Image 1 (cartoon, rainbow, N blue to C red):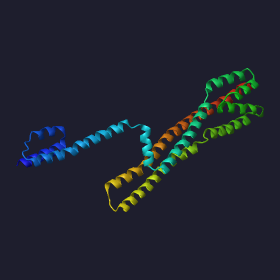
Image 2 (image 1 turned 90 degrees about the horizontal axis):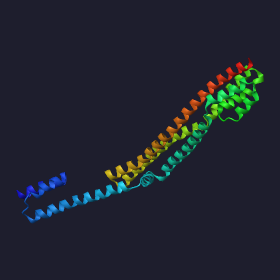
Image 3 (image 1 turned 30 degrees about the vertical axis):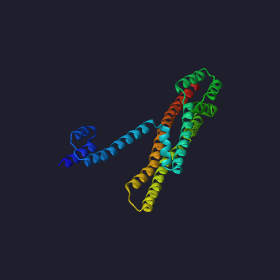
Image 4 (image 1 turned 90 degrees about the vertical axis):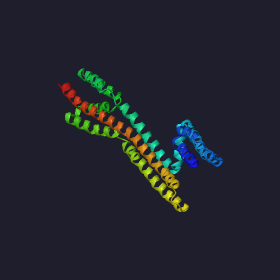
Length: 270
């Protein structure tokens, strides 16, 4: 009877921790064999707690770049490198577009006000020089319109429309490549996952055992490439949408400025 009570108390120690340990200490163990068994059963639990504590401490102290490096190696250097290359090239194109678009975006209200002042004063050459020295597609459209001023309103209007389309294409230059890398990154991740799964099943076949450790380890490594590809795609998508919003804003300014330009010419001819 006492032996049965000691075993029940021992399971309570392993299941509920320190509180049940105190309860187990109240049980009277009269046989030496029972005491040895209790010590043998408690020792692994204590060692397991110590190992878990050390492991948690290592995780907390592990730097972020070291954790990324480990996941990079686990996911397979070949496919992970391709995903990283897609990220680098996509970011390079995105930053180039962002810089170009920010330089192309000017304060059109101030520009149009200065341009109209020069046109109202009859200084057409001064207006041309002002447009030539101002950056951005709006100034370029105005300059091209002034170059065809002596050919009539129809020629000026067609020139503005044609040159506006050219400038809009220049604003959108490179976006197709960014879109390609957005689609390519997760595709590479999925491809790495499929190949990783095939390798995992090969390991299972070689081991001749459907071990949970082999299955879980293989699937975890295979899914790392998918996670990396999705993260890269989300990062590039943010920059891509920012570029689209900037292009829409500049295009709207170009359209409004073109209308103001024709109105200014009508007033100038009067």
